[in-house]
Image (cartoon, rainbow, N blue to C red; front, top):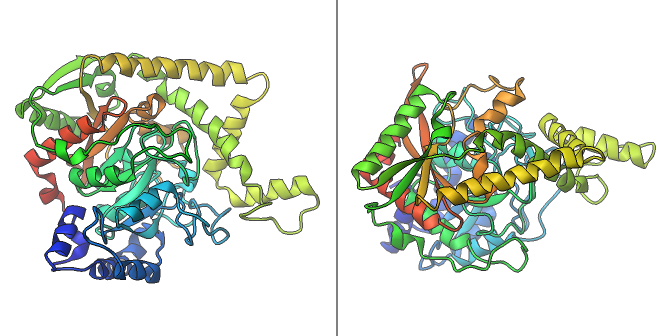
Length: 481
């Protein structure tokens, strides 16, 4: 029995049966990382000694007892580096505290193990913007794994992790999960504490699980969700037992199909896989209804005003004074700021800081930022109206399968369009999940694609129920792993 290939649920069963120990799991993962990750670039670091020490005292009776969980490198884990895949922090910052999600993982018995690669400060859709090392799709290493949580998705898909945490600002959990063939869940904004998450865009960011099965996502979400007094945006609402809703039954469930998400620009193979998955849910008893999200056409523009504006404010703290990269021999304070940030930040981060600073500047704030917030309200109202008619919304996750590394590097707009179906969920604050729904043959290589299911605010139970029913009906995991 190879622990690396097991799901959380299977690993817990093996622990209880005495077939494996947490130490076995950690050592097996370490060996798999050594054998595979040099070619894939999923991890930026992993502390084997610390993980083994935690494995020795792990309590398998706890909900996640002794289960190693990989962590995206913008979530703080005490005593470990937190570089956000940026040269401005790499080798220069060690976290002095645990993020709330890490505290809750530890309370559930899990072992944080490994810091996963990402687009620098979570700004990207391909993981090509990592300032530390490239990340590659395990299905085809010439292709991107998706971003910004590309490292978390690829290590789960490559069986160098049992499960992982990522963060989702405009699709950064769901999109790489789709490209790598795993399950990625973006919770409702406010469902999971952001305390200890290095902020990209504070009104959009949300931490969530990337796993091998829907059941594992439900287990992880149950562990990390809940109100946190350290995060003023976290909502004080009871966290349900998500596992109890995973019955496989979707009879009577109403699924909305937004006509704007099945329009021009969608790859034919992706469309076919998603429509087949929707038909499978219909066959299982769900009802489909065509709906409209009329302000969808504005979502991309709104996102790329609001997110960079918030990034510009959040990244102002990286000035080389308190921590992080510091330019050598500055001539004065202005030169110190300028060169420290110039040397530490990558091109995409600079692009978004410049854009964000521009839209917040005098004379442009009302014309761009204020108007974008008004349209954001309209987008949110679209979802509110839709969820009066349906329980969940189904769509593709991405317009295409994973593209070749370098194909879109010189065309930021084409890169941004990769998130066209995901970012509206962040603007509106609703929850969403990507579940593998098929393989598309692309230039002779089979590549996974995902079915996206969106739910109303705090409707994670609905999307988990639907995703699990689909997963059980088609058993894609046995076909793709």
